[in-house]
Length: 125
Image (cartoon, rainbow, N blue to C red; front, side, top):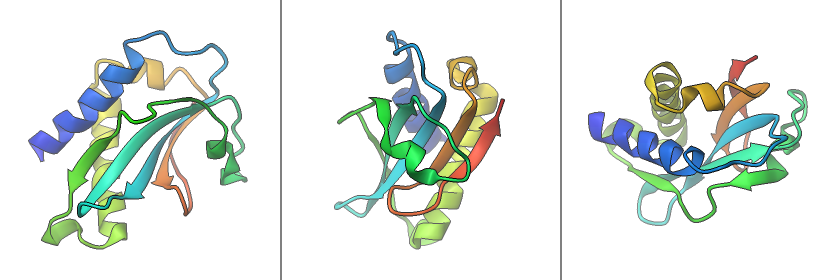
């Protein structure tokens, strides 16, 4: 798990150490089922946030584009729900310990979810 945690830390750091656009209201960790038996993670920032309408994640005012991180599927996280729970745990740990957690928490909300599914809100300002 330590290696996977470092992967998430690196994704956030590589994207938040640069200047990010003013006006971001929420961040989301977009999850994808990767083609190489992985879960792929992309960080986006939206200039909209509506907890009752998950389409706010579609307006990616800022995104990590091709700078994604990949978590290899294992027996423990083969099913998408297990993958979501595992990656959620990694992101929650980042929000407690990460170098740029204060930037993430400077917005109204932080979410996580598969791009074709529901969004779980991990943080509210």
